Length: 320
Image 1 (spheres, one colour):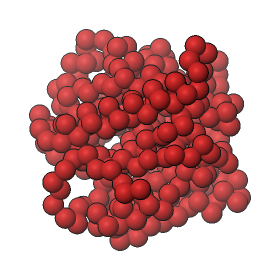
Image 2 (cartoon, rainbow, N blue to C red):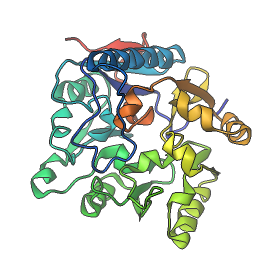
Image 3 (cartoon, rainbow, N blue to C red):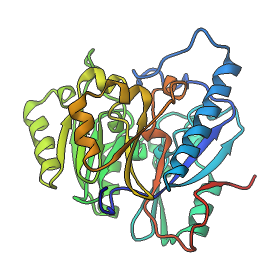
Image 4 (cartoon, rainbow, N blue to C red):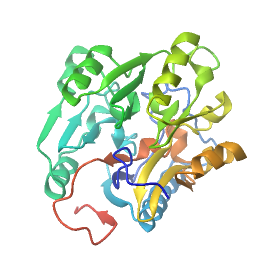
């Protein structure tokens, strides 16, 4: 399998919700959201809980370190997507982000940051959340898809991505911002960049057709190719089924690409073969979670930090 890469984290944080439901406050600009009219709210919440549990166990089996935190509240319906409120970076850096929806602002947790400080080498935490007071938002690695090798932050313009905040992040963390427009079938802006694209160590998945400016589309493709990556183009239908919402991780035996079973089912043989040359595909059924408009990548906050102590277990639950 592939060599170790700074692009693929070997650990992740997951939040397991006890009262999951699609967030009514984010439905207006998230066209990927939907509702299950056939199941009662309790059944939906129970199914989401089980999907997170199975995914955490499946990742741990591959050698990925998984830190699971519980969310027993009823006030944070999107807490299952922690990658939006914090990110970690090599050299011991952590960023905390300003969130667009009021109930998503409640997702930030001190216990997650304290765990990172205790288990990993953290030098500083840069907190951008105060920008919310000025209606300035940047929803983490949902708003940005980061190339940790080429040091480029790809970002689609939306309510969730403010260019001033993006510039500030890029200055602090040494990334080059690359901003562009992307729209769905109806011409509505894509709400998060990470449903449109995934950057792995040796390839990138990209919904090229959803970037209407042909010149900018080519610039994005060429910038990805400059790093030696193969660009695997995804159709609009594949993007709508979360094929772009994947993440490469470092497992015990090499790289794995975590994605949803729904996304995996839309990939053709050539796309699967291209991915499999450098990463093992690892699909998970998260169909209930996907009702909230996000998928596997949104559920995983990657840990790009060095550990303080040797790791003996791969599935770790936070103390309650």
